[in-house]
Image (cartoon, rainbow, N blue to C red):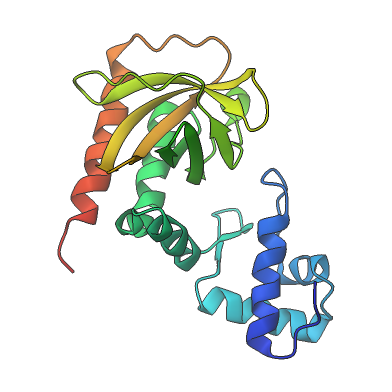
Length: 212
């Protein structure tokens, strides 16, 4: 990584360093985050503060650094669904709390699944999603816009994760979905999980459409 000259450049380096960390790794505190990209203590603290103020970084309830709201908006906007960026987190937390499963927002396009913001489950239901999956078989959505899918790691041909998903919005060849990752062989035939997913999709749509 090139040496940064301005405080904002250093803030960008901080953000890039966080993005490059494995999703399973928890980075807490400005000093460890600054050291991860080779910044000195003083400039590192300043860079982290700038990154937070610009929305490049956020914090979990446990204090761990996360990608901030402006990055979610930028990423989802690039895929055509920027209006869901600011409302995704509370809806995903509510879905995770009600199902005790990892909840996520993603975009499906051409057999690929790009995972966006997510809220991890607890205990045996703790699953951290990958950034990208493939779908070997296109999802078959029912009348309630729900489907069960098998997510496959990129560059592999073996299913890595089962999920139940619900359509939030569709534009041309892209579909924004909300879903939960299923641990083991959990049965999804019950109506309770399906109802909670449908509710989450409706909440995302209704909040995103509210006038400012």
